[in-house]
Image (cartoon, rainbow over all chains, first blue to last red; front, side):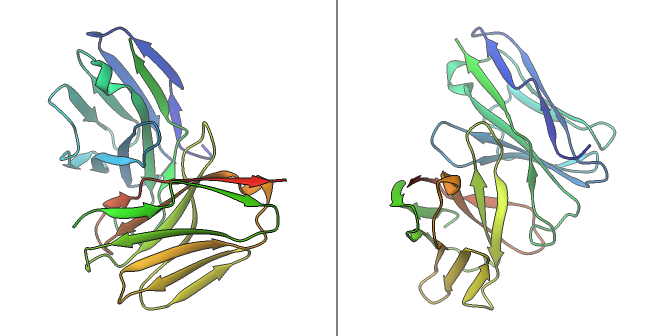
Length: 116
Length: 112
């Protein structure tokens, strides 16, 4: 596709529910990132994939967060037993190469998760 | 050491004026400094980026000024337009790595 596509755009979950957020990166992009953006804040790194390999998950806030990219393209971020503090916009980004300065990050429009 | 401090938090500028947003960092290993623009309901989009081997980079109405000794860099928007009203994020990274550290953002409003 022309850009990074994320779905759903909005998700309302009751506390304790599990949610799954999908990201379709730009075709051929090697690197895929998930960021969390709280209201009025900058994006904060969650996890990084190079093709299907999850090379860094140091930003995942707890073991309730899980991400996968099994075939090196589409990625899913899963949050189990959602809590109110999980409410945020979840941004997916992709880039064509593996180095930060070699190619820019292309962000999707995010999924706004609200936990009630 | 991993933080990027951004100011101001919000900025109001008259149409035609100059908007200036500042960022400061501590980690001297950072060597790539992009600025991202984000409109409401959209993801951030790369606006302009600089490496520390130059002190200034200009693209159209957007200029990055870089002060390596002070570990500061800033975004200047000349002839600001209402369409520039958005949130701007500075970021820092290290060449060859994948991690970006983002500032907290500046909400710019340009009055018509």
